[in-house]
Length: 479
Image (cartoon, rainbow, N blue to C red; front, side, top):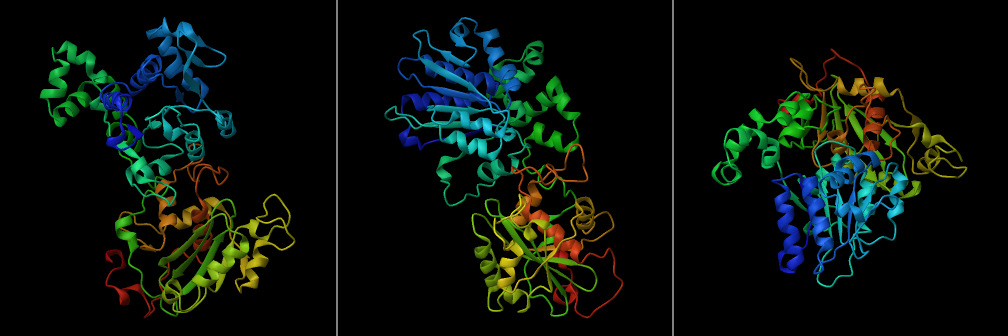
């Protein structure tokens, strides 16, 4: 699949049109070979002389997928390649293609100050969002009439799955992001004739027939049934098969929360009855997001996530005041709570640290002290990760079992986004990837919701009460 950062059609000059023609071709041929061709041809052309960066997250992958194939297929061109600099020069000594990688997060800063007309990021979902964003600072050009381009090739999954899905699939943009700068080209396995070429030749089928006379269904069926690569993909676990063979960007959503059913469990808000339990939960943060939420539990042990506060780059005082405002009886969220405040607010241990590496603020007053001034009293949360995840996931629907956890629609997007993007840890599938220690993985709302669930968790309850969700709706799953 390819994602391209493009200008409007009116601004595309001859070089840009040639560039776009090659991008479209890359959906039908090997994307790696194609954009190496784009970079080399537009670099060697006296008319354009564009300078490109071909980037792959890890050095070994860069060597295997890009540098060595150029040696094999274009040895004459690679006579002008400098191994130590990882730069391919034109015969006249002009640098045309830089090959780059960032094995560690901080390696990305080695590209500071560089200028590239074209930036190609291969397998972009393996790079962190920060690395992708930082490379944008090097995507600039002084060539008149040319708009610099950043081209991402990617499959679903990886550390940036959620970030890239938001931009290119869901097209949900933040204030500083211009939607016109992001364009997505869907490419499937059967769009690339290379994977079926051996069998096509054997069967006497031309490329013209494959592309111009066969329809999409015929190409798909032939590729899936004949291609050895497709056969390998079909043998993968279901999630990976759907992602890599069919380009399904939704399959990794909520992989850790597999049983979560958005259609059943995301419901319209309603006012919480006065005799239900209310619990607040918070995961402190300053440069990283601070997440706060309120969860209600009825007398039958059914949980309702009411709302989520999710902000970063604010002081603890700012967070405390903003959350206090949301809990006021006359606010929208306060009205949903029936004018009540949570009976308890639980938080991770960093809210109680003073001048330590886990402290959110380097001051004698802790995060909890600041909240106390606003009348919000924080208590230490039950912090067993695996027990917490198990308790939360046990509330999801299963065979013969109705859901006991619901989320109010329109008030909890940060929580839902994290739930739909997080995956399990490959070495410890009972915990999420990163296990809370990877800053590139957003888990702030997940952690605090886990705290909130465990603060009032009870597996089952046979106590009946007149104040249940069924008085508000015949079936909360069908809101």
